[in-house]
Image 1: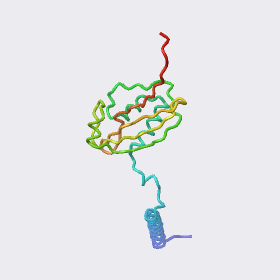
Image 2 (image 1 turned 30 degrees about the vertical axis):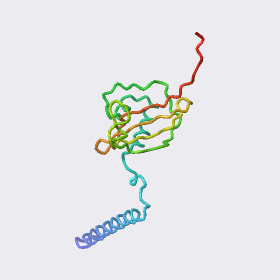
Image 3 (image 1 turned 90 degrees about the vertical axis):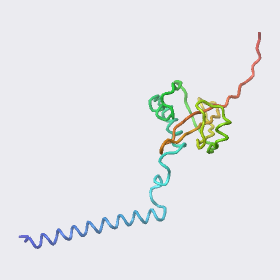
Image 4 (image 1 turned 120 degrees about the vertical axis):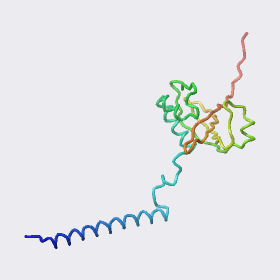
Length: 162
């Protein structure tokens, strides 16, 4: 069977039109999914947030990855060495708020907290023991970094035998 130049051109045009038609249909589906909220839910969540930074912190803590842990700190040059054997079994964020200027000034912390820092109250199970920890996060461009934390200590009184 001989194909002439005219019939070959005809089929090339048909293929081109078919590919444009398919492309338009796929774009239309994506637009319809976005409009109805059926698109990818990850696109609706912020890429960076204090909660995601905290989640990464716990993952790197389990791996004892000091380099990656430091990359989450607002001041990565600080001397931070996580203890080996520290296991966060579970954690739950129990409170979140944005710090005002007055609140930042009232919290005695080094380095000083700033207005618009975010505070997360977290309940952790560390090595099987419940703990309450407050984390503060600061945004730098789009990313959130840990700028400080404070562990609530509930000392148990013991009698001295001296």
